[in-house]
Length: 167
Image (cartoon, rainbow, N blue to C red):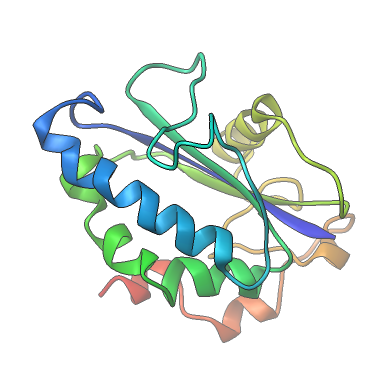
């Protein structure tokens, strides 16, 4: 099984505005770190231009990042133990605070590439029902083996919550 992950963030200003320029400039190097990270499988791309964001019908101010990883640990290492972390820590400079969940994960069969519509449905499921084996977060994680049953992950306790890492 592989781990699918989707983030959706609302911009403070249009992508072509000076307020967001530094974020846009960081897209290429951070996408390169992602694409070269151990355990990286796939990332939704609009084109081969590493600075271009995904075009979609969910609103012009919504930036979506959608990827697939070999494991929770591989995704964790990219998010919290790579050059991605300092950019993540600055997200409030470029994105509005969202009170509801903005990131979701779920298990998929190896070789399967989920659609953006499926990812947005999983995010909506998380928002509507909270963490389940079908839609969860780092904090409320479900192992692939538990995805078909009730119960959470014991591995979740071994890694600090995302909020603790940001301190």
